Each structure stands twice: as structure tokens, then as C-alpha cells.
Length: 318
Length: 283
Image (tube, chains in turn red, cyan):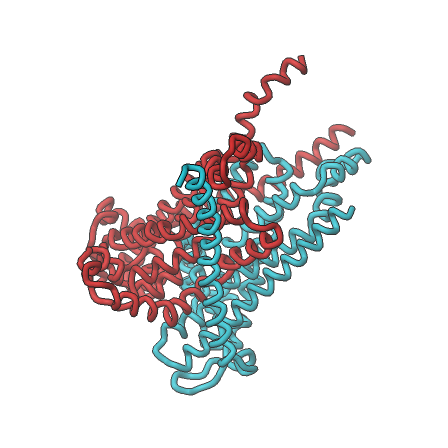
């Protein structure tokens, strides 16, 4: 009887486990397939693909650096804008918000994540870009002298992309940061208050406790920004030219895939585009794994630190 | 000013600043909703749902084929993703702590973070290139790959929420672990899981990037699995970047339909979970 029991449970475990392994296989398969499909470009350009500036389908010369630059630059600047705001939202919703407002406000901030990317893009082209253009045109001359604001005010370009990315990334970072803050033991704040801390000082104590998790939350937002496609494609200007200027039209890895993939006439062109996808996959994978490790690490200290606190009861049990 | 006043002022400033952050995030939300509704309502009419796209230059027409296409793609994606996602989620919850379960959780999070356009490229390689043909099936697979990690994580969380006493009750009556899971734990978690799946479907319905080179687009009505198929999102994209005023209007109408779909599902799912919570605490 017992053996029948065990056999059935084993079958259950193996059956569900086999299906679950599909997820692991899928991640591996994506990496493998991208590498296999881009073999032509990998073997022809090698590592120079990552650092070459020229993207010329006509002469068959492909380098991904303008796209890598565009992706990283837009995501970093977007995070500089979105990070503090997301953190502010997390602090407000988890520490300061009146109880009655908490649920509706949380719901509203999360709605930002529910709006489809294509809708952001549409809004970006017809509403945001004109606003950005008049803002750029109104920039004072001393600012225009800086490399960050050089060039004509065209509207489409890095600045519009950065703004849209920041809005899109906020809900992701904010919701993870909120959860991380929620995981901080109440005793941390109580201890601060007991020492006479103000609200902000108590929050600082909680923030310090949660620092790795908050880093993880911001990095998770960074990962989102790296891979965002439609909205960025529609407002960034699609020009494969590296520039520090926020006013310049630039290009990202995701955008070049969205725009040129179906137009790639010859095999080398297609392989080079797939290799851009591979590069994007590798970068987002690294960022995501990093952020998950930080968040998991944050959730673990509660367990890891227990022995220190539980040192006294050990004697009791013995 | 003494130090205590400085600290108190600083603290109040932070309270206001963090409140300001919420306002800053909700401002674009309000703006987007305002423009989508005001511009979308102007161009939304019955023809939008029942008519086919007209040729360039001819006014009117609708997105009947795209709406049907989106529904078909979503259903196909769900057919792939729901079984895999639910079973994986059950495994990750029931055998939590084992090495494979941890790997599955990690893979789900990783997959969730893979850019949707990269999933499009991947599916292009496995389901388009070998047949030299964009197809509805490829689009369905791409959407399915995007749904799997979401459904896995939702199922896992909800199965873990089922009270241990229910499971123990079944085991005490002599059920195998498999039986306890299938007949007691899963039914208890089912309403929540279904809510989660509906929410996942609504979100995936708004995806464009994975469809660009898998399902592609189609000017005509199609239900064939092996032919390219239109979808609301790709059609909105095509219209949005076109130079025609009439197409822009249609794009706003399409955006309104998409937003209405996603938002109504979010609100319904939220109401449903709140009722579930009340039922559970009432027990």
C-alpha cells in the first residue's frame, strides 16, 4: 500500500516537474536559438560587432555600438528620472499614506504598467513630442552650449524617449520597492522612533535596512527600460548615430529590430539583426539576474539573521 | 533655528516630496487616459468593429479583422501557456525548496524579463524561418511564451496561499499527495488562478513587439493558422506611423479599445480578488 502511494506521488512529482522544466529549457533555448540564427554575423564580425560604429546594410557592414549606446543611454537617463520618483512613491505608499488612500493610489500607480506600450507610443508621437519640441526650442542659450542639449529642436529624439521610458518604468520599480520596504521589520522603525527620530529619520533607517532590495527594484526597472520597444521606436528618431545630446535622434537595439527586421533582404543583414537581439538578450539577462539576486538576498536576511536573535531561546530548547 | 526644528522641517518636506512623486506619476496617467478617450471617442463607431480596413484615401472602414485576429492570437497563446503555466506553478509551490523548483522560479522571473521583441526574434527563428511564412500560429506561440512566466508565478503564489489545514485534512483522510493537490488544493485556489489568467491575457493582448515578425499583419479577414493575421496592436502601429490623417483617427480608436479592454479587466480582477479575500476571511 505504501509503495503504491509512493509510486503515485513520485509519478505526480515527475510529471509536473517535467512540465516545469520547460521553463528552464525555454530560457536556454532562446539563447541557443539566437546564437544559432546569427552564426553568419558572429563568424564574420566576431567581437568587433560590439564596438563597430557603422551600420550599413547596403555595403554589408554591421556594428551594433550605436544601438547598444542608445539603449544604455536612454535607460540610464530614464532611471535617473524614474528612480527617485519610484522611491518616493514606495515611501509614500508604504510609510506615509493615509490608510484609506493606500489601496486606490496603489491601484492607480499600477495602472501605469497596464497601459499597452503601443498606446504610450501613440500618445508619445502626437502629444509628448510636440511638447518636447517646444520645450527644446525654449531652452536658454547657455544650456544649449552644453553637449547634452546641443543640436536643433526636432522633438523626436533621446529626450522624448527618456521621458516615456521613465513613465513606463516607474510602476515596476515602485511596486518592487514598496514590497521590499514592507518586508522591513517594524522593529527597525520602532527602534528609530524610540530614540526620538523624526518620520524621515525612521524612514532612513528602513531604507538603509532595505538598501539591497531597493537597488534590485531599480535594476529591475532598468531591465524593463532596456527591452522596451514600441514606445521608444515611435519617438526616438531612429538614427544610428552616437551622441551625448538629448536632443539628437538616436536608435536602440529593440527599435532597430522592430523597424528593420522584416525589411532585411539578405542573409547577412538578417543575421546581424538577430545578433542585435542576442546582444540585447545577454544584457537584459545579466541585469535581470543581478536584480533578482539582490531582491532575493534582501528577503533572505530575515532568515539569515534569525540565529543571532534566536541565540537565547536555543538554551531554552536544550 | 535650532537643530530640532531643522529635523522636523526636513521630515515634513520629505512627506510632501514623496506625495509629490505620486502626483508626478499619476499626471501622465491622467494625460494618456484623457487623450486616448477624447480622441478615441471621436473616431469610434459601430463600423470600427464591423467593417474591414478601406484602401488608402478612402475614408471610413474599421478594424473588424484586427479585432478577430487579436482574439484568435490570445486564445492560441492561452492554449499553449495555461496548461504549462498552471502545472509549473503547482510544481513550484508544492515542491518549493527543491533545486528544480528554485530553478523554475528563477527561470520564470528571467523569462518575464526577456524583452518582448527578443521573444519575437526567437519565435521567428523556430516557427517562421523553417516554413518561410509568417503565420497566426507563430504569433500565438510568441504570445504564449510571454504568458507562461506570468501564469506560473500567479499559480504558484495562489497555491501557496491555500491554508495548510485543507491539505492536511485531505492527507489525513488517506489521499495521496497528488490527489490532495488535484482535488482539494487546486479547486480552492482556482478562482484566484482564473482571475490571474484573465489579467495576464488582457495584458498580453496589448503586446505589439512579439507579433511584428511572427503574426505580421494582414489587410484581409483571416482565420487560417498558416497565414499572416492582423492584430489590433500591429494595426494601430501601422496606422500611427502612416502619413494619413484618417488612419491616425483609427489608430486612436484602436488605442481606446485596447485601453478599455486592459483597464476593465484590471478593475474586474481587482473586484474579484477583493471578494475572494472577503470570502476567505469570512470562513
